[in-house]
Length: 427
Image 1 (cartoon, rainbow, N blue to C red):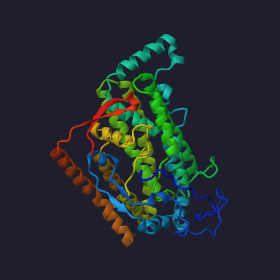
Image 2: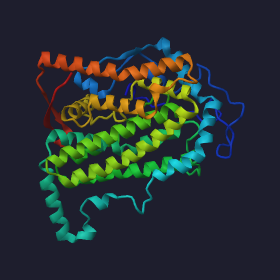
Image 3: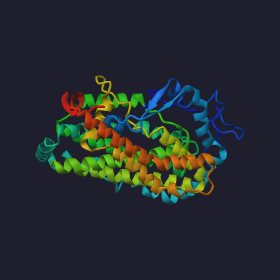
Image 4: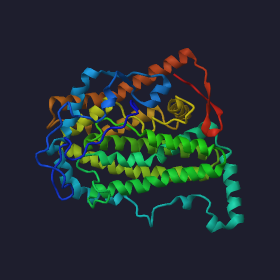
């Protein structure tokens, strides 16, 4: 992430455009778009020049082709996304609520039928003392075959999942869909809570597995989770549902790819229990991806110009990973080292990032967009559709540079695994 300063959330009556309705009685119909002087979202992001890389995994390859955002561009950049908070843009979300009730909420699984962590790991109540201890010995024997570099990726994925309080706050920033009371009955609010409930199981089951495996320093892992939640995460255009739903759709697919790759790798090393755990998480993430992809697809149908400009905005500033602010209190470059391990093991790579973008372009029919686009919309469409090839060329150049340099792996100690070193190739 570019900044550790979380976005400041504005409430009704503080310059945020909103519409009075049954769910939001604090809004005034006279609310206007905030002036540049009062736009406070992500202000810390622009206080100095920053370099934004295409993706965190490309940085681990050394392909650091970024764009420089200058303070002088602040007003222009904010103007670009704040326009998506205009009342007529947010009304689209009101009109979509009955559709969300019929086509998004059914993708959630009730607690009675959803898998639970206790279904996938040894349960002492069901097995009894002897059976539980025997099952734990078997689990530890299988876990011993998972290489340390894959184990580091698993821990990093678990820490990412455990920062759920931060992630539930993300859609609750989106104007027009957020859960204003914490128990709203709107389809959007019920989706946010139901999605969070399903996501909660992911960190739980991975944490329990690692505790039982005996292969990780759980105190250091727990401290890293604590620090990550305290640090939060910063998002570009954090209040816009157009930008926000694009971000979450991309993230859900990235998470599904990462857990799916992990399941395949650990299964090949003989840990079928962990492979089953990661596979169950991947299946959840794919359902969640389907939901957010459908939502963005409807935004493309209702307002293709606004949707493609939001997509272009997000891709110019890249989809940053939600755990980029992780730290264990020892390694100042922990996230970069974790990303390098993910790249090297094939858990999540620059090619995966490009593949996700290509999938989204096809899914939302971006290349075919024509009618209803403004000049800015056409430029955004062309930029997004040309981006995968640019990323591919960057990958090839990075690979060529790495081959020429013949970089040797650097042993990096990870506190998560008792400071055992993992050899990774650094930029």
